[in-house]
Every structure is written in structure tokens, then in C-alpha cells.
Length: 489
Image 1 (cartoon, rainbow, N blue to C red):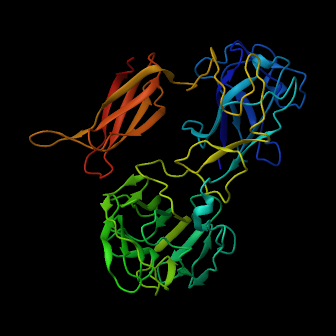
Image 2: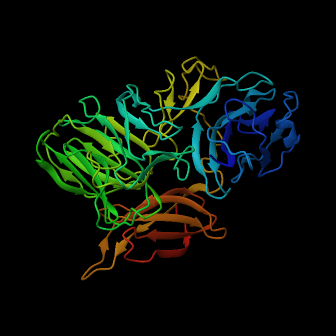
């Protein structure tokens, strides 16, 4: 859930003025009582005209393309998880927004992109954009064989073929900790677990690609004790141990013929009493374990994984030994698909339960897909001066589009991250964050290249100074800071 939502990056066909008769936030069922504000005052009308339901009163801006323009909703004590924005038009089609980006924030300072509309359909004069909406969807949901949200009183599988789950011991949903939603699955560290029979439909076998992932919150110490996240005696096992993960896979369904012995995740990224995303991925002949979106060492083998008749178990070994202490949220198995093939930003909301409506377009295929759908996504829109084209294929000449509402421009900041060594410094793969120097706002984040150490931030304003901070996730060194940086052409 997010308290703050904002609409930025607005552009119109005419590129001269922005005109709206309504701008209302909803959760899909009712309008939000959120307070609407704008970073720039309108030239005509007042903001209250955008929430009164009267579509004949138009609010306009001629300076909407200036950096920093945003319509902001503050939900205060009634945050929204999935938001819709309903816009009302004025009388002039050229002044209606074609594009826009909806972002959310918990504190009003750090913003996350929720969806980006590339071509909003003109609803007619003084009318509402009632035909578009946002839905959660996973284009690969047909490949999901197990999906545990940990919501509600009963633990259930939300995949397309729900499995029968057996709860052993004190395993149960708990509201004490949750990454998303209202609860997660709690394991007491005394052998409590969730089990379902291993089948060829459930678990990856042979040489097929797969992704097994979720979020964990370990309450026990991150010591050398083996704590089983999921597994069975054969063929797949994942353990938390010494602040990282160890993954084992066997070529046999009856014997411990491990083809990975073991495969390790990145070091020291499991921290006691903190949530972290984990993933085990096979992509062709490559296996890799990820923590917090950071990949460990790649192991390569052409061997296939065996199949057994044991119980697939979450929260301990199948017999209850090597128990995990803590919480697991959003546990998902995807067969036949490597969702991650390099470092990535971990999913920022619950995994979807559906493929989405026919004809929808994924906003970001590397994260949980956000789908922007029109009721008739392939219908021609007939913009002035253009031939009928399907959704998302417009070329908009001379369109004032603020691709970054606050910090966009044509400049870039780049550099190299290296670790002190002898005789030469060594390029390293590290998280790099870019701050606007005066306000301290975090405006970009990336990772330096694992081979060259190079990083680059593009499309930046050249009218302000920046601070670059590099972090050592191994925690052997303190962060390195370079201030007073300029964006260059």
C-alpha cells in the first residue's frame, strides 16, 4: 500500500497546453478521498474543479511540460495498493494528455513507477477516460506450478492447477510480518512445514529452465546452521546458511547424485529480521542463486535434474529436520522459464494470479508485469493528422514529453567502480546511487558492470549538481562518495 501517488511525464498532442476537467484517484471500486495538489498552480480553474464531478469546468496549464510538474494525491490514513486514475477531458483534443506515468511513494520522497501510459485514448469532449484501467498480470502465469501468497486463514495454492497442501506443526499465516498484503507464512523453527507430493507437473526436472523464488524473513541468527527454505531428500534443496543460500540438485530421484555441490548465492545478504527476495534459476545450462536481485556465482552443467516421489516441502527438510525459523511470503515455482538472467530489481508487489486480458501490454517484463489495458486495445484511435493505428504505436512529433518530470535532460554521469588492489585496482560489480546534491533526493540507481566496473546514468538535467554513492554489498568497505558531479552531454 502507498500513501502518495503522483501523475508525471504528461504530454499532449498539441504540445501547447494541458486541459483537464477531472483527475480522480480510485482503488478500482470507489473514488479515493485523497487530497489532490499540484506542483505548479493552474492558469485557469482550481484543483477542486478536478474532483467535483463537473466535467464542464476545465482546469488548464500552459507550463505543464516544465521539470517538476506533477499531480499528487495524498491518501493519508487510507493508502491504496492498486490505483486507477480517471481523467476528464476539456473541449480541445489537442490539449488532452496522450502519455503519463503514475508513481507511488510511502514518504513522498522516493518514488516507484507503477505504470506508464503510452497512448491514452481521447474520450471525446468533456468526458471521462472510463475505458482504461490497470490490472496485475503475469504473461507467464500458465507456467506457474505453485504460488503461495500466505494470505487469509488458510494456506492455499493460487496457481492454475491448485495443489493439495498438508500443514505440519505450527506452520500458519501470520500478520506479525508480511512483505506484501496482510500476512505471510510463519515457521517456528521446530519442524513446522508445508508439504505437497512431488510430480512432474510441479517441480522442474530434466534440463528445462525454471525459477523458484519468494521472500524470506529469518528470525534465527544467520550462523552456520543449515535452515531449509524448501526441499526434499531428493531432488531439490535450498538452505539458508551463514548469511547466504546453498542450493543442491540431484540427477537422480533416489540417490544424492548432486550436480551442484552446492551452488552458492552472494555473501552476507541474508540479515536477521529483514526481508529479502531469493530466487534459484536455471537458464539453459546455467544455474544461479539470487538474493535481493544480486546473482551469485554461475555454475554450468548440461546434466538434468531427477524426479522423485518425495514431498516437496517448504519450511524444512521433508522429514522436518533443518527447520527454518521465520516467515516466507510470495513463494512461487515457474517451470520452463528463467525469469531472471542477470541482476534485477526484486518484485515490488504481490505476484499476480492471472495472465491478464487478451491484448494487454506488459509495462516491465523483468518485474511483476504491470498491464495497461484498453477495452478495445486494437481499435483505431484516429488522432488528427494520422492514419488509424493500434494502441501504443503512435509517433508523436514535436510533443512536449517530460520523460523525467524533475531531473530529465540530455546529460549523463558516468564512472568506474574499483576495489583497491595491488599492483592495480580491480573493477567490481557494486550498487551505485545518484542523488540530486541540493535536496539529497535519490533519483537514479544502477549496478556497475561486473567486468569493467563501468556505470552510467543517462537523460539527466545539466543544470544541477549530483552526488554519486557506491556501496559494497560484501560490507568489507564503507560507501565511496563522489560529490559535486556534473552531467555532461
